[in-house]
Image 1 (cartoon, rainbow, N blue to C red):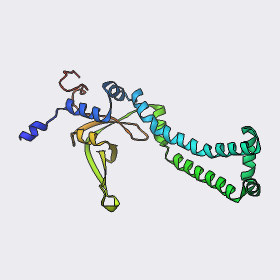
Image 2 (cartoon, rainbow, N blue to C red; image 1 turned 90 degrees about the horizontal axis):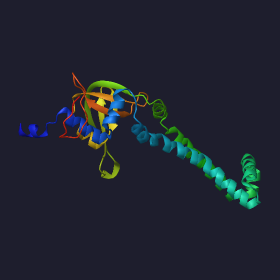
Image 3 (tube, rainbow, N blue to C red; image 1 turned 120 degrees about the vertical axis):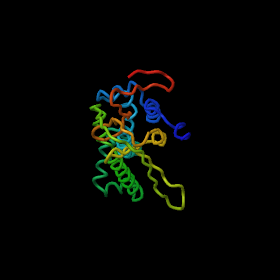
Image 4 (cartoon, rainbow, N blue to C red; image 1 turned 30 degrees about the horizontal axis):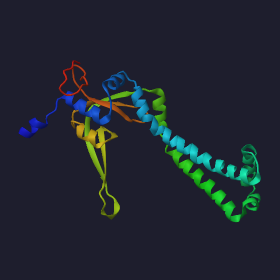
Length: 224
């Protein structure tokens, strides 16, 4: 009984702990309650789309830029004239090997193929559903009992297992951090704010029957 009393948290404390772990503010939560994604959330989530898009572009373009520059130097051509020369060599393998030798031709073809393969991998990793969610900036509210769940993935050679944490709402499993996992009052009823396509967790708050919980630091008095 003493331990339960010591660890008891009211709903305001639970909301504050969740906001700290998931990095959402009172202004952010208010925007989510209105069905909108806040500007801060867009800035936080945008790199998840931008990084694979940038890497796709770099891997797709870089080998052509490098080899165009090499051909321009070898043949004393401008970059504008060297690029058509590169394309001609790539479409005529015999000309490619004559211009660069067998080893040079193999290096050119190999580097371009590998780089384009990496570009394709990065392209498949682009979260298109999240991209369209960020464009629309809409948030969907779902209500129900949320459970914090831990999953361990064993690694070879007896190394420490990989631990993953989730909030589970019926069929939906939302990846979260360890801090968020610990902040949840598991089994209580919550309102979960999600991006509709990607189902990325935007914020979460305990459900009250009469009024919303005000998000404020512990010890501060607040009114709903």
